Image (tube, rainbow, N blue to C red; front, top):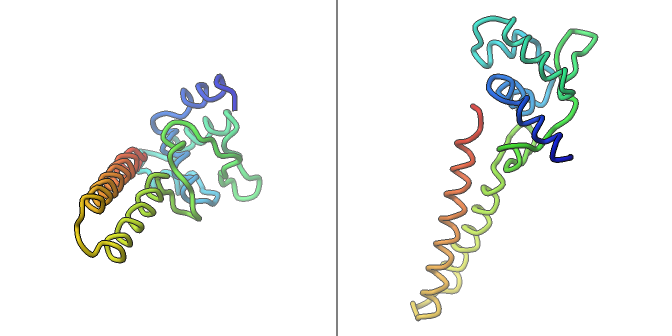
Length: 148
């Protein structure tokens, strides 16, 4: 994706349009205007329709001919989405996996290799704790940035 395209998507995907895009991405299935309205607590179906049409105009969503539901055509990794990984219907911050991995090895090291605290083992224990804390902090910080 070119830098110009990315900034254009950043500009177009803001506010309620961003929430609609996130909902469709998270749902992983086509949704009707009413479903979007109810899920995002919009004041009327016309608000949901407006934002779905905005997403259609920039090429991220397509209206299905049968049923009239809206489905994602493509995914863009802009803004906070750059830091998320989608597994099925779930979205996780990338740092969540780093935190899980580092914490698992940290706990394994403590359980299996630390018999007594020497200067070297104390350094490794402190370093492992700091790394795990930083990764968990970043995972939680990005988790809070998601739209809803």
